[in-house]
Image (tube, rainbow, N blue to C red; front, top):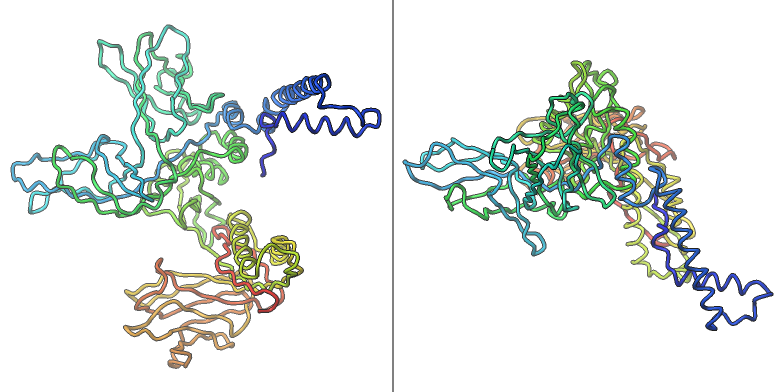
Length: 583
């Protein structure tokens, strides 16, 4: 959804000029001198009044309501009426192995990485600091008495501490004073008093199942200034802190997605006084994201209100994924509808915003998070996104006299716009590729384009396995043309020969080396009508792509080049080749 013009951004001088032009269009006022001091003053008054009336009308009739508001502060604050808290920025995180060189037989039995321990990575010449969210303890020592920490999750950002004193019996609202807060890192503790250090931890309210008069909960929402606030119960719905209790909040301020992609991280402080630290990145920084958008809040708040923060129907699990990965795209369905069936499960597919799939650790964390919110004995099964790639060959006819581009510039613009179309229109679960719509879109890229013809190549991929012969079945969701299937992007031995597996037009697949048939060994089969390709008995030596994937390409057996895909499949335009005027 495109955000409309915000009335508070109206240009006063421009408004006055439009008002003058409107008056001059009336024959009665056409010869009036509106630049004269008297009329100019009147026009200023009218323009001021018009802008004020427009502003007040917008605030009363648009910004006061959740669906029509256009300012983030108003949309976010009004989502509280649906018991929804918009997602804050999310800090990028990485997984690292840490080795601390001690070489001392008398060293302590344990070593601890605390939140005060800092790690640093650099991107584009700027340092980004990382920390753990809680103590990580290691008892693992090697033969040299050095400590090892495995798969430590570190978050990018800086810690902030704030304290408030409870005053009286009124329910107070405590403001987190930074809009770059990552609320997932927030901890809230209440200390008895200045003289009593007894401290009680409070947990974030997530659903009505949390409520009880003795439960220590805090409630969070966004205020009219766009800042997050913390509030406590009234002693009935949840426990209420006493007068003169001290509220301590700790949270991380983050650079969000700016730190995504950092793959080299070093220690920036000692660990328990030891400075010989080696850091090995297991998974580079990812999943940092900006705060939830206005459009997302308007879409997700009603869904979250309906689900109540728990998983009861398959649709509810999309909202639970959003809690952990705000900018991810998710789809969920009952296991009985899965192929093959997974009775007793809810199947959840997640597409992260900054990479193609979740890591094993992220899947485990998400599974645990969902299972804590399940109703009944239903279990969650997290599955990878299955990408369906569309490769376009575009032959565009243009009139160069009607364009600001030269031919190479137009080619580049078409490729850029096709990638944008993929990102904004296709890369969601359940979307289909429509070749007619794509052609219309290409025609609209530039006024000079007279017409275009698009031929489509469909591509699936599977992970190459160099350890044992493998079999993979790939579904193209449409009938495919005989003698069009090509499996490529791998080698079979130490040589650099060009190896491909092709179908023979009769349903069998054979290997070709440098364009020549290698042998009569069958390496798979093709069901042309159903569009299913099975690769079998394939053991690769190496793959060409950095992600380890082997490519399987085919074309349609008809003029119909549209495609509709399955539940966990996302369509993505990958390769775009452009010819101008039949080049």
